[in-house]
Image (tube, rainbow, N blue to C red; front, side):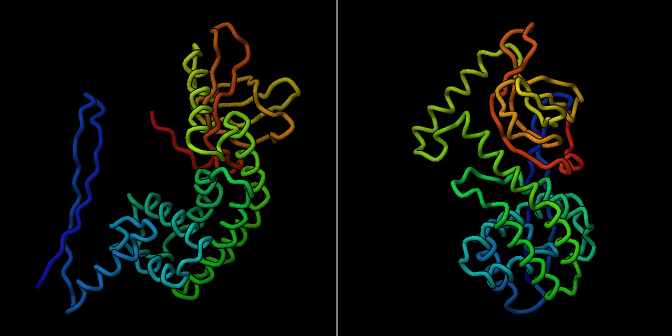
Length: 286
């Protein structure tokens, strides 16, 4: 009987001495019937079109995502959703992958919507990525329920309705914050590099620099008060638009101060903006 090997190779670091070590996970699976190898190769070609990791071909979700890709064809918005969802599934389920969609938990969908999707937002002129993502998610889940016999649609619909306004606000804020310090984000790479150099120079000039996720806890006309959700340290920040910030919103980014005796910190760069519920899903590693 013909066999095939699928090998995962992950590079990790030895925390004690900082040396690289390689961990290799491998298994073998027999081809059950003539022609299965050709089917596998064809599935791999389709999976590559939406960046599904190779291991997805042997997990429970692989065939469903491939079937959905075949269903949606070249639809731009559906494919953009599928790439985001596939990356989330592959990352989220890598260590402890359930055996079916039915075995997933509601938190799987909640984390996707509130915590993972905001990290995938891009700077756009229309600022409609949140709306499009939620529409495509509901289409996918309705299709998935019909295909697999699940009943996830009511759960997902509840989360999408709850998140819709918050995600739109976060997307608008993310775009505005990035463009304040990165006004050429929509332009050619050479112009974007000029903005990036200014930000890098400002960070280099600072005596203290912090990169974390901060929860907005107070807003005044002159400064913003935030709490680092990892260390719980409180900062007063200047350089953020008070009229655009809402209490509870989470800002992931870089800030610092130029002198150790400065009372206020300066906001240097925004990486992501999240709704408050995303706080439940952040894990910090020392």
